[in-house]
Image 1 (cartoon, rainbow, N blue to C red):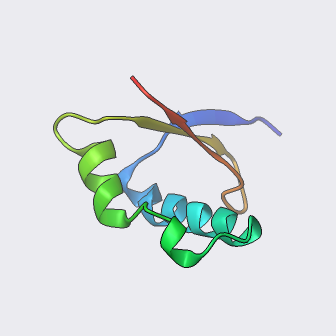
Image 2: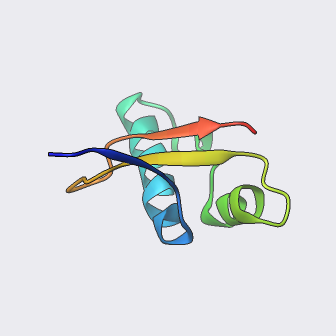
Length: 71
């Protein structure tokens, strides 16, 4: 199986936010500890001047990991 690392796309935003939420749950953090929202991802990651980039691994039956790379 060939693994590909690709840049996140708009269609991935919901999954990235869910991944952050699930990680916080796993680490037993309170729900308010998760500051990431879909709106923040869209504005700061995919806006006219993105503050960060996300890379994802494919193929995946489900999203297992995401990485935050500052430009």
